[in-house]
Every structure is written in C-alpha cells, then in structure tokens.
Amino acid sequence: MGARKILVTGSLVTAALFALSSEAQARPTIKNPNDHPEYRAELEPHANFIFWHGTYGNKYGRYNGVGDAEFGGGFRATIEVADPAFIPKINNTVGVTFGIDFTNCRYCYGRYGYSVWNPVGVQWNFFFTDKFSAFGELGFMLRSAGFYAHADADFFAAIGGRYHFTDKVALTFRIGQPFVSVGVSFFVGS
Image (cartoon, rainbow, N blue to C red; front, side, top):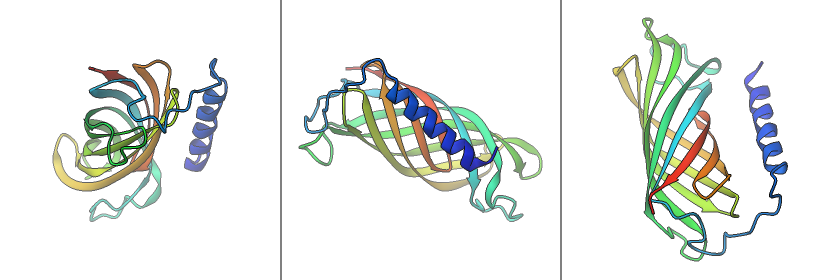
C-alpha cells in the first residue's frame, strides 16, 4: 500500500470517528479564552510512521523521497507555559514539547536496525470546541542511528488535531516532517 493511500485511509478513518461520535453537537469554545480542560502537562504515547525522507546528511544518499517506510513508537510530553497564549482573545495555549521516538531503520549507516529521535520544540494549541482542538509544532530534533551513534540535528514541523473523549483523554493525530503519528493524550495537573 502506497504512502498516499495510507494517508488518505487514515484521514478518512479519523473523519469517520469524528462524525460518528455519540455527541455530534460540540459546543464552540474558540472565542472563550481558558474554556478548555485545565491541565499543566499533556502526556502522549503514540505510534509513528515515516513515509518520506530527506537526505538527513547521509552521504550514501539512500534517504530520498517516498519509500523505505519506517515504523515505531514513542512518547511526547508537553508542558503548558502560556494560557491564554499569543492571541489573548481566543482559546489558545502554548507549551514546550519534548520526547523520544524509536523507528526501525533499513539504512542506518549499514549496521543499526533502528533510529532514535528526540524532538524539542514549541506547540501552539487552539481549542475550537469542547470536543476538538488543533495544534502546530515547530522545533529541532536529535536523530541518531542506533542508540546515539552518528547523531545529527534536524528541523521538525507538524500540525495535528485531537478528538477529546473526556476532559482528560483525547485521540491525537499528527502529520509533519518527519512523522505521521497517532496516539492518546492524557491531560494531567491542574
């Protein structure tokens, strides 16, 4: 199955979950600052998929374009630092996000079978309704073949959305460079 088919299928499944929700009527909250679940941190275990690659400084040039998909898992934590954030008249927060991810790797400098990724960046959250929030992320990540052998720093950027089952649990979907990820977010602290 090609990367495009996987992305389309994943998007359709996510849209179907939103549409088939038992509470189809979500209450708008974007114009009400602080009208979101109260939390200090978001903890997110997730599955990762990498469908496209840059050259990533690999002198062998094996990471180019679509193909050689990688799969794995990881954990992300986001600590809230501003609420409301950059636009005080809408329902938004900003947090520092960081974590660790592992993926299988076919061409990891010839001898390692996995990659380790450590993202650190800024996450800007928008709470549109009591059931749906979206975010954008921007930062850098340390990428290494094996356990911190041949480490390089890379840029990352992503957009994503969350379907909130309760005030403390949400289904999270992220698409960006380099990951597509699906996980469950737990909002803790208050």
